[in-house]
Length: 292
Image (cartoon, rainbow, N blue to C red):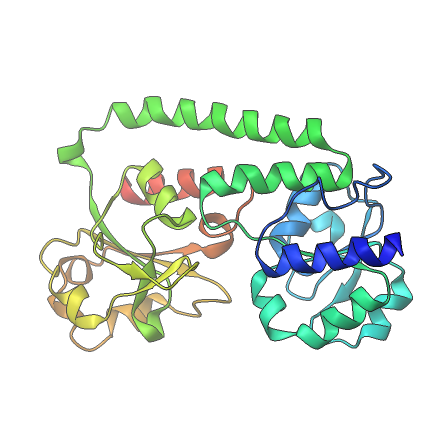
């Protein structure tokens, strides 16, 4: 009966988007030890917390870090039996999977497997997310050390920014999805990276969908800033399979200053959109682009 209540509570809290270590695993204070991650950011962060051995399965899309890539691969398109056979005590997902594979998740929960959905939408939320991973796995101290180290690096970066006057910082359009002419939401991790790198976001009026890092913008609004855009920056990866040539040859884009001057750059989406420590590398990468 207690086990049933535990999973009922977990299910309710995950559906509402709330997560708390006071709910998950609190009954016996035992951290989860056999974890399947269906989101590359979870896998990367768990590894950073020293949980390589506890991570028994990763997503089919995982590409980093190298030392976990030989682990068994899982997808939300797999059947429940594959998960159950691996005997996990925790499956970590993100909201997209919660919405797209409800039947699978229901089957896993009925089998007694805890399923938790986590995905921060901003850097501030990322710190809470790291703490949550630490609480779930008994790595509270390691999670706090990750946060402290990250913030220390941001302080060092702030000193670099102080040497660059606002008037000398380039104005940037940061593309998220080329095919749909989308940029990023104001509070997104990607725009945090741009700001910390010393760039000025030109699409400050972009409006995001609810709980999304992506914001519709449209070609007309991009072109309304054509003469102001010093650099055209685009994330590249699974979300945005774009090439520099695609951007340069986009009809109408020749009106954009950055296009005419060949100031078009692609940056790995893993460095600018995922809530991991590699955001720091993303900041450095984008800064090198802006001030090359």
